[in-house]
Amino acid sequence: MNWREEYNRKLTSPEEAVKEIKSGDTVMLAHSVLGPYTLCQALGKRKDELERVTIDQTAPTFPQPWFEAGYEKAFLPVTRFISGFARHLVEEGRLGVHLQDTCFAARQIAERELRHGRLIFMLRISPPDELGYCSFGQMLWYAPLQVEEADVVIAEVIPGLIRTSGENYVHVSQIDKFIEAEPLFASPEEIKQTVGLVIKDDKERLLAEIIGATVAGELVRDGDVIQIGAGAISGATAAFLVGKNDLGFHSEILPGGIMDLVRQGVMTGRTKKIHRGKLVVTACMGVTEEDLALIDGNPMVELYRVDYVNDPRVISQNDNVVAVNNALAIDLSGQVASDSLGVQMYTGAGGN
Image (cartoon, rainbow, N blue to C red; front, side, top):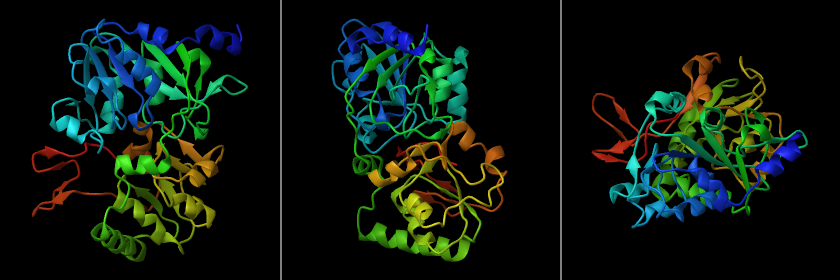
């Protein structure tokens, strides 16, 4: 059977695809910034047929049926990272929290003895290419591992998802069920707003300018390898690096401004000891439509699993790494909190 025949044999409707899910299963969603919206809606319609189906996700950013009243018996939604969209759901008790270090979370996915019931993975992918390979799009995170370890993989095929080098591919033969859905894209600007990557006021703008100027003026030298964490203020740092030479990039996310440095010849990666000449990330967040067009099919941009990108043993193979990350609070002993404000959980563990 060639891959086209296999694809057509596995192609079904959303309603038929989610019939694979049984009471007691764990349904893991690909990173919820760009999650399988159509499959989630179809699964929600089965609330009267199911009991205690765990919905395991990271940073949910779009409405899902199980966040509403009346779904409590059927679904137990939990998140591994609290997004701005989900913060009120956590506070109201409609979304559980399962916070973990990103690398540990990836390992746990693979440890079947820590799970209850079957693992169902639902995700979005691009249509197959001429060899039967699909792309995960602009966000990879744990997806290759989830495909390998799930008992059932259900994919929502969306036209228009970008393709990159690295590990950003999955073959038709690795998927159990396909559905075809409309490209209900959140725009890059909507993603930035939802995830919290937009400067909100003059105070944040001034802080970003002070930090960006300090990083560029005192910390970053020509040839350094840069890491920038998720956040509006840290993400603004890239704009201050114009004028530097031969910078490299290895970071969990590719924020806005980095592709401008590529266009200007600042970000070349020539001095990197590993993945020389490449931008290595696990997700593209905060980028513009023009950035995505430049990333699509660009061999300079490589997406890998988050537990690889964030592994200190990988990061340390590069010399002169400069990391710029956000913090919420620092105490008098120098301890930094990036996940909570007092007793209130605000985001979660993660980043490199």
